Length: 258
Image (tube, rainbow, N blue to C red; front, side):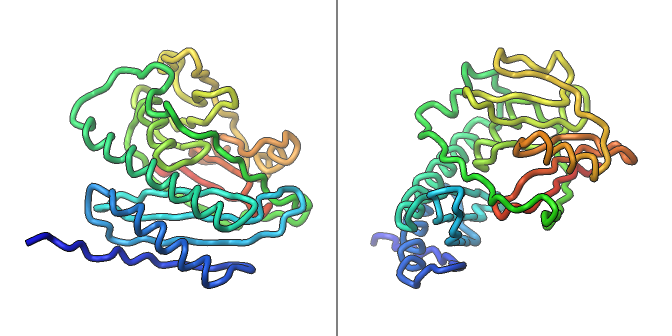
């Protein structure tokens, strides 16, 4: 007798001018994508947000997160219309689940440095979502997150960054024990800040020590330089921190706990 799989419950949150039809479309699409998960899907959540941003044509933002057997997989995208955003979100989530399956197959052994980061081969170009051009004087740190990281190599951290579909990933370097940041490079590959020089084993990887700053100094540097984030060591505690631009024009702050 064939085994019938229970449908995967997907919670959907609608923000802005997003209709119920888009919510149902996203629920069906993401539930179908999660069918390929190689493990029980404990929770799944989709957020659809319509933001009228004069600086970008991509007003539809869609993001998904799923707890697959205890590991959270995330994907996020933006497009001119909500159906386009949902379609791209489904693709990205499938890609993340495929990465998760590949990592589970190889986590029992130590891998060498892949050539040009093989796990990204065949990836579609990422569609960057610019942050809302909020005046600097009205920006605030509206999200703070502190977490502990297991020691990692730059390649392992880059793999986690790709799995989560983030532009940067804060971690503790396995060689030095120091707070370290891996981030995407515009020309492809990734760069490293904070790891010891001998950990920068790839030609596309560049090691640089983070500056010692207060939160106010980090904010000033972020506003002046126009970069999407700034990695620094907190002046008083020495903790590794990343201050970054959020999509709503405010700031987020991530701190690496001891």
